[in-house]
Length: 104
Image (cartoon, rainbow, N blue to C red):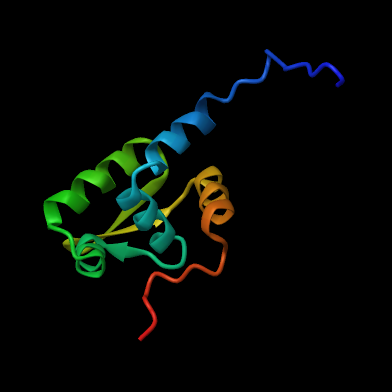
């Protein structure tokens, strides 16, 4: 078997951080849902059936890691995915046909 060489000069810290953040099922669902549309926190917690505080904590982490951004519209903040790396990871995991709304 041929010997394999690894490139020590490649820095994959950002990719590893994205994988850590997306490693939680709730955060993965949030990012997957936000890939198709921007949503406010109320819509997200209603769709996921989770307490508002839980969703807000996950959104804060995603925002701090640069995966999503929030845009204020009056009193509501609408979140959207801004990290192309995160989009690529989620697409690789679940495909690009993922729909945030479950079939009826």
